[in-house]
Image 1 (cartoon, helix red, strand yellow):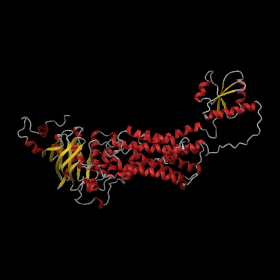
Image 2 (cartoon, each protein chain N blue to C red; image 1 turned 90 degrees about the horizontal axis):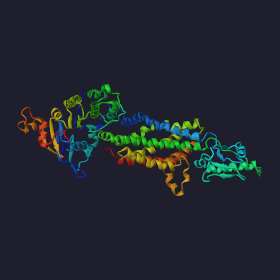
Image 3 (cartoon, chains in turn orange, yellow; image 1 turned 180 degrees about the vertical axis):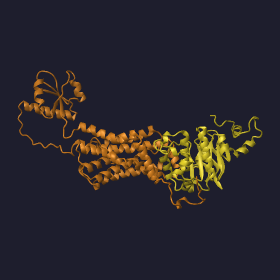
Length: 363
Length: 247
């Protein structure tokens, strides 16, 4: 081997940079991060398969163009057959047969929305706190009264809202995309950093000339490569299988997804900046993500929460991401329509990164 | 020329004094060994010299520079191997070394490094599949990536089988021959006798003896046991009242 020693006093800065065939450290760090991720089969499962599974489940619960029928039970007794005869031809009503004596339990469990007891007039048993039970009561009541000879003063013309883009499932899919971006950004970055810390690899890295900010940035950047398939999977599924429309531009959608990934990447760095064990990082991750699962309007509108909570909910990163995704996908908003949300996401991401760089534990 | 100089280093961990007024000088081009029982303060000392720990008191000068003023330049010119680093299991040997090489502005080619540490056949293996000796040679390769002027090695051969130890010794001797300076810590007296020009025996955070292995053995006077010549191990036991490996 042949080596030459640098003469004393030669400043490294002034010489031409020779990385011996390696690329810029930022690229090598990001590649290392990406390789470690894709070589972990479980991580790939959570990032890609999970959001699709979730979308499939939702698609089963909310079939395309279909509405949820009212499920009605009929108690045995005199007149039960007549009731069944009327109700079974009624659209939107499904009669569920059940063993005698199981009616009360089925009602409690939500297996039937309404229980009809044959009598004159009939008796309805239902839980008025359940929306579907109240709907079932109205449908059954109207059907039975019509069969009994009720005369309606008029019949309203109905315009059923079943266009793709305005159903619950269309509203839900952008929420799932947001959840998936949040989940993988935070968990994959958090776990990778804590693992490197536990293995004393961070300490070894800072004993080299590596730039700390490049390491942190590469953790976020290495993940972005996976963003396209990861956010794309539930979106493509939504479009192809559920007929969800995408009204905004692909560019606007990509920018929003990217902003979301960077934002949660910065938060992930911050959460992982001090944690020494997987238990510690898991606790921090759950503490910060679970409340957002609930309040950020993924599964039901965030406006259901009291007015006093709204100022907080509105500045949460998941709320901003999901709102922006819905605006772009469902309302066709351009980037100028979601600047507020993008600003919120940027603030969280940059704030997380800057604070993480300051408080990060390298040992 | 001075490789490393430290004067009156002090480091506390809470109530425990890890390093208690330690001073030493390592000349350029020499191999210097820090010997001492576990808990003597060797690792704390070497990590202060590596710029990974702040001393509570004392002065440190490395290659004539200070950590406060020349942090970035020193990082480029030092090679470091730490005691317990585990590289990522699912990166290949080449990917790991390439990553470390990318941090340095000059240095050897990857091919060179693989040849020096004799890991050419393992280039594409995952780090998790390597033996202990191979992992340690990878750690040394990462330390050599920037073609350093000074190499810090913390217990480089602990836990290795005799063959792997000798392989590593040969590699370090070659580094010396090219003019490199080494500061290492070790538990093994034979390692110090083979590799080091000078050693310092450290106990309770202080240097209690310093000199070439031969000088230290000579200070013992007549060998206690007639059947064999005095060894560094005898010096160590006489000075610290302990054997190195006992815990």
